[in-house]
Image (cartoon, rainbow, N blue to C red; front, side, top):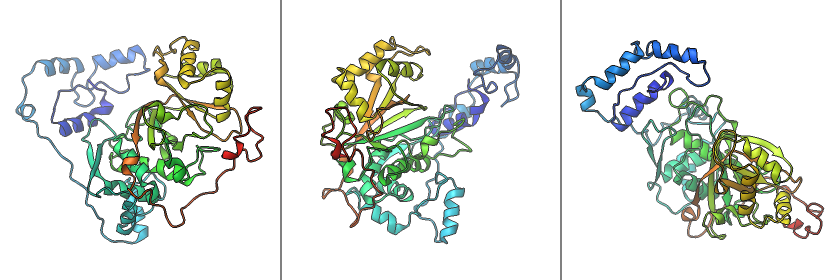
Length: 421
């Protein structure tokens, strides 16, 4: 039984998986409506079939299978053509926009020449299969190649130097914006030497629109999800309000140089010399705040996913270590104790479900609370060419913010590192 709002999904699920199960559809929604309304649903008709709901339930459980149900036909979607016919630039921009192949912002048109240039960013064969993706479990997962990922990387405005990171995101096979009425958001965190190789920002305003690599890599994941995960707002995407975080997916690099703890990817079993991208999924950002672990636990207790990810300015990380938290694990255990092991929604909190990312420019000892949970960390190195990152003769870089250049920020006695950023 599924509410009538999802009847189309059930039909597509049956076609994609060859399992025409019998369904009945009460009206939508069923959450946060009066009990009297729910009783009317039960005593009324199925809005999809028009039949009395309870009698329909009896019938679907007792009537023999039809021939169509005994012999389901698996329907496969036709593949899109590799190339579009030539046209004017204005017409092609309109075509991409009207077909929902963009995020609503202008894109770089993926001409054969630009896609070929993007492919120089890796040694992998353009026709090598990278993975399969769908934004909803109700449709078949579509297969995509290195070349198809390159098309979306070009559209996002990326350069070949960014391509290994974008391929790693594609290889995760996770969409940045999965279809859910809860309007999920995502976060991307890059670790390892490639951060500096690409000029990514992990310091001041790293989550803002001031870094080319952060911007195009995060945007590329959204375009991958739209085009390779086949997002169609009119058919298969159910975000109630949607999330503005989907534009860039909070793409950033961890500030390993100014962190007092081991990098995030090392926590997950990778070497410090390896480059990785870590993916997080959640609903929202609770806001910036200041204060001791007790305050952090209070903020965390209001989250509903059974986990949390804190983004800490390096000033906060150093202060916490000076208070005795030698590792992130010790800090997580303290927060669980302060939160008394749970939250108002009854989901247990475990130290392993609490993450800390050090990021920021030491302008203020603030921390950011999110309900994001870590879903996956994947290697970038496998996609890097043998001869190294393929840079332009003059790599594109936005102005870099200088943090603590006068050595005046930081805790007393801890300013010797200031010029490193």
